[in-house]
Amino acid sequence: MSQDFLHPFRSLITGIATIFAASMAHAESAHGIAMYGDPALPPDFVSLPYANPDAPKGGKVVFGNTGGYDSLNPFVQKGTSPWQLRFWTHEGLMGRSWDEPFTLYGLLAESVETAPDRSWVEFTLRENARFSDDSPVTVDDVIWSYETLGTEGHLRYRGLWSKIDSIEQTGPRSVRITFNEPDRELAMLAGLRPILKKDQWEGKDFASAQLHDVPIGTGPYVIDDYEAGRYVNLRRNPNYWGEDIPFRRGTMNLDDIRIEFYGDQTVLFEAFKAGELSAVREFNADKWNTQYNFPAVQRGDVIKTEIPHGKPSGMTGFVMNTRKAPFDDWRVREALLLAFNFEFINDTITGGAQPRITSYFSGSDLAMQPGPATGRVAELLEPYADDLLPGTIEGYELPQGDGSARNRSNIRKAAKLLEEAGWTIQDGVLRNQNGDTFTLTVLLQQGDSDMQTAVDIYSRALERLGIQVQTETVDNAQYTGRVAELDFDITPFRRALSLSPGNEQRLYWGSEGAETPGTRNLMGVASPAVDGMIDAMLASESHEDFVAATRALDRVLTAGRYVIPIWSFDVGRIAHAKELKQPEKLPIYGDGPEYMPQVWWYED
Image (cartoon, rainbow, N blue to C red; front, side, top):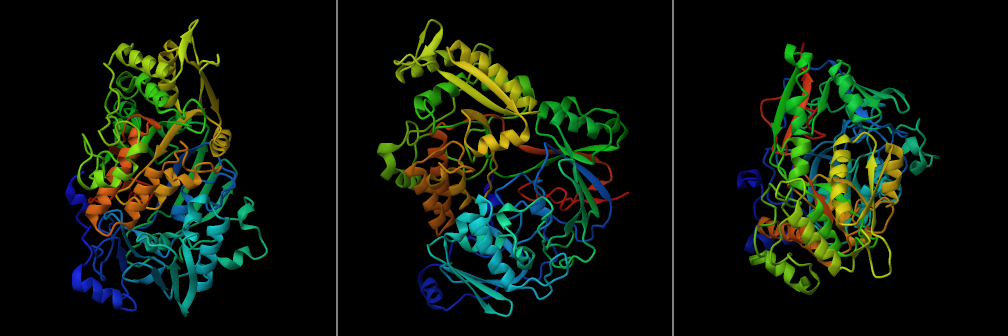
């Protein structure tokens, strides 16, 4: 990604200006907040730059999900809810601009105020902010939401609560949150927490909500009909309070959105071809090029749209559970990486059209640089040098195959590493000195045909090494439960990463939650170096230090060999009904949960 995408970052004020600012009781109230410097949009901005403020309202669309659901509460750990709900039915005090890293603008809050050192943040609610039942959003609702989500909510919300020293009302519509540790991002995280209606939950157990206990939100959409596991119907609230605020202008334009549920991706695609769905996202470039030529496409009734982006690759692949032997040995993990014949597998599944992910932040300015660590990155890693895995400081690159089906050279290297780790072939079976066989189980989700194909090819290579491979394919509910209980050896893995990584990195790979059921840290990494690099990111007071810390984190994770990376999603691909339109200007983040359908509209 080019430096232009990170232009909104600016250095903090230094010298005398900093000393003067530190002596002030509080900062000036503002319409937005950025991690470094000021928001790009002025206080009188009309709309987000990638939204069409004149987009028409109306239209009915149908989208498809695979699997099912048993909850309509996306804010608790219990159950599985449609992933779209928390983006469409609820809001926070602030909202993200997807055209600026690390920048938020007022949503439920009309203004935000912070201490110069970000030790506290204060939000002032808009006077007209309303829940979907037309009741006003109060400071009481805000305080209750933070505490309830922080103590009873989904794990993704609990980390912030442990870092809040106090939360108190400071005016009729104002609330101040004071933090207990230095972390510049906390003020921004606080702005993104969804706000729930306190009175709805009086006398009810929030964490164990039943299916019919649909949380009341402030968002543009409300659930008006559903059938468990089959569909959810949402309608745009005609009395939505935020219709004309700048952050919302030109967004949430569709009147009715229906989510239909299908057993697997194949059935969903056939429904789309039959005209039962309005749009689908396609993640396989070969399928995009070869299977999207059905009659509706040829007639022009379905449009194929590609959406470029400038965000990091994130990590997609097969994650290894290092809580279990022998995956706790880096040599075994490297051997499994060597045996994964990416070039051949990629050519088989995507036609070789999608490049491989090379690190967690590859494709962006935050990615680790080739070769040995230098400068500030080396300084950050040096205190952990004795414990870092080979390649972290010296430089690490993923194994490359020769493109042939046999991949002989890498298989030989893998066998040698396995032998160093104490595993040798005895009577055609890989065993350790105790005679235990190397048995590996891959947990797959039903209907994921690409991952099944990849595993089928991979298994043949592993069997040549004497590894006994088993594949367990389970339905969505079983899969969610198994992964939550950390009951897997290897399983498909996806972590989307942004240009503004922060506290969520602790959830993904921090030591604290590595053994907790339901953790996002599926690989089980518990590394002082990883924790240290995350701390350095969060404590950074300049863009340069932030980039160095992120590049150092990328090195530690990549050289950790926790995931077998596969192909990147270097461009978004959406096939959609011709009536669905999008703005001409694209955000730097491209497509995502808050781009399509949020800024699209329906036009006959």
